[in-house]
Length: 415
Ligand code: CUA
Image (cartoon, rainbow, N blue to C red; front, side, top):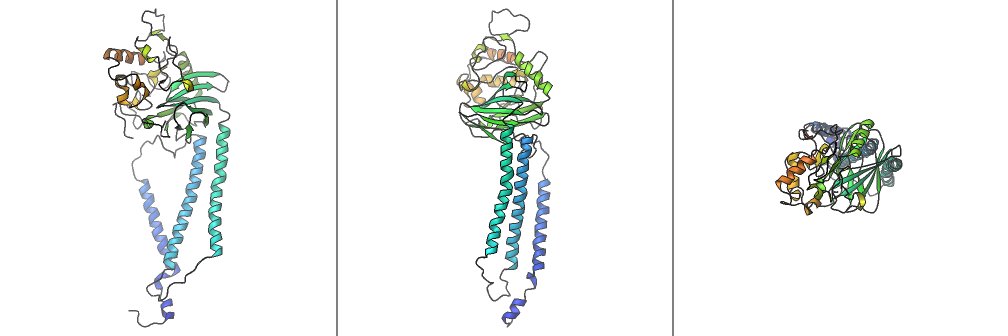
């Protein structure tokens, strides 16, 4: 079909592989690909993403986001550049059907070798410098907090103890899983564990930090805006690792101290069935003394369970103002009387292998006792009602759409 032709003819007959033609084709396909990707990326419904890593709400998360963007854009430039070069070279220098000889075979080019060694080195340096600076900034922020909060990773929940605030006062308040912090203050979390390694992670507020035995890791978090920020354990730590959720509730400073005061006041009461009840003292059901081997209620007579790092593994969450918490079992169940009854009935069926199930199993508590406990537990709230969360008559969270907690049934949500 080519007919007889000499080499010169074959070399010149390359109408479709001109430099400009190739450029045009590469640019057209590249452009189409970018448009298609943009359209695809914009698809999908707007959903609430409580664990999003791309919506920072603190200076720490903001710096992580900046690094992420830097790496992303550099990687994109490298990717596009390399792909462009591959496609261009393949088209421009390929052996066409008109060519009778193989294209020139070139091995080694010092200038190119140096170029593609230097460019990656420069790219890595551009990433390395701000990364190291950011790490040192984090470290500096964790040195001087406005508020110290000890966090103990337990199996499988988080125990929280408020320490010194910026006035130098030891707040000494214990709670679990729902951590209230003053907005705009540098809260330093002292992360520790007396069991296995966990990882404390609130994606919108900070990066992950390990919670390990024998060493205290300090993490600084300053929430820019009031709001609820969801977190979870990010290191596999056993059967219920997935249900080791928590949240940070950032509120204005005055509200924070109102909350602290209600936690300090606690729930004054007694488990003694014969005790006289002066005003403001609640009578806890007698069976609650079983709970007090592992749980604590601030203000309740005979409440003396060990907390913190010294506590045995079977130690459970502090129950002070429990009725105000949104969830029980570390984010697994919405805190309402039905779920509490399920839990008290057989905690091991709801959250297998949890330590409460080593003491309470099906049949340990009868219906009467469960009802008494339920009534008492939902009476554990401040006199003037909950400062954070809602009053227990209206179980909070049950109607909240998209919150990362289970549905009111005992079955875990599949999110
Ligand atoms: Cu604790 Cu995973």
